[in-house]
Image (cartoon, rainbow, N blue to C red; front, side, top):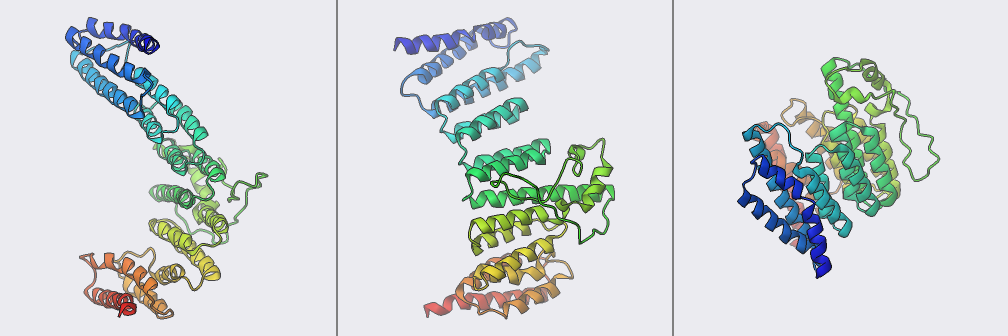
Length: 396
């Protein structure tokens, strides 16, 4: 018990200069400082006792965050321009202790990362991600988290790809990681395509653009089409200093052709023994990106693979049926004809309960669109009823 008290006292004494400054600058009153001291003492004794839990650290951090928020509001109100002490260092210190003691608690790592992101402590974030991923290499969610951070916060697709590639070395069996890797590439394609549209750089692309494979001696890495720093400028994420040359080079680069997500799809299908359910999930994910170039080309390659490996699966058949209408807005004048093409493909297959369920999942959201053409609504409703009867038929 003495050792626990000594340790708690040691940590409390380190905050004395901070509290003295708060009192001198009248940020907090004497009574408030006594209250802060008592509260911190309670937390420190809990943390240094044998029965401490991750929640004790989480509550301590929450208290310090609220205290720092109050401090900043008062500093602003009082017009204090400089302060030797802020709550950031203390909060980081508590979170570091928490993740060292309970390194297996993912929630604490996420809290640590989120706070560092909020504080824009980017150097600290690099260290935190490195520590978290080294301790939890089999956690696919952490790799995805790190990759999205690299792209969202820094527009660094090279680092994002590195995180995903490393993650797949440890989490090859994670379907989510494969899907999210391809999704990250499609998000990147969308950003570049929109950037090109804004700058008026869109031209008719050469369909026979070369797709090169990376000469990587590491067999654990997915062979992707080569994208170099000369193809993609880091300035793409900024509004100033636009590198028009780099954007023009992308016209002939594989990144806009969808070659990279397709390479990921091929590698994933090989990993999962051509699982049609995975192919279906991949198809649905790609459909979220209606504005990307070569959408139809990517979807057709997915369906081509599914037809070659699992032609009798309802996952394959629903994807094949939906291809004609893929990427076409339901309110577009082109959609009725495209939907007719989908219904034509539906007639090629027996409408069993599995396929009928997939048809219902697709068609029900269409019926909820108020602006849907009345004639098209009639056709969709009739197809829905037919699908519902197919599900009910076996139970009769």
